[in-house]
Length: 125
Picture 1 (tube, rainbow, N blue to C red):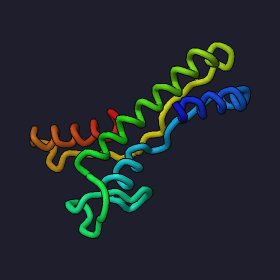
Picture 2 (picture 1 turned 120 degrees about the vertical axis):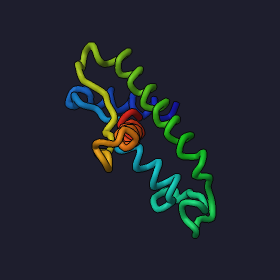
Picture 3 (picture 1 turned 135 degrees about the vertical axis):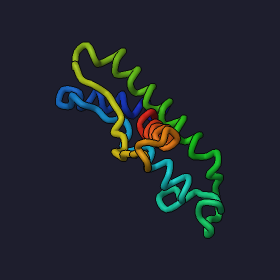
């Protein structure tokens, strides 16, 4: 509830000036770099992604963190819609990473599907 309460405080105090809210900035970067590769805070990773890793589980933690990001975003959006949207008339979203994947071989159905899966993993967050 802390994130929801923080968002509520921001909407209340700045909503007269802010019309485009971003609840999260590049959550995929935080998940991948902080909980898979371990090169950003909190520095969690697994031996299979980083041989010098000392803590973390890169097979599960990134998914748990991503799930919780989405729950926090949903709570912030709910607060905004219920308490502020009618009077402030703003929008709430997430700033997603901007990567793009193309098939290695355009004529290969397998490569086209792989590129589509990679795009879904990035943008269908």
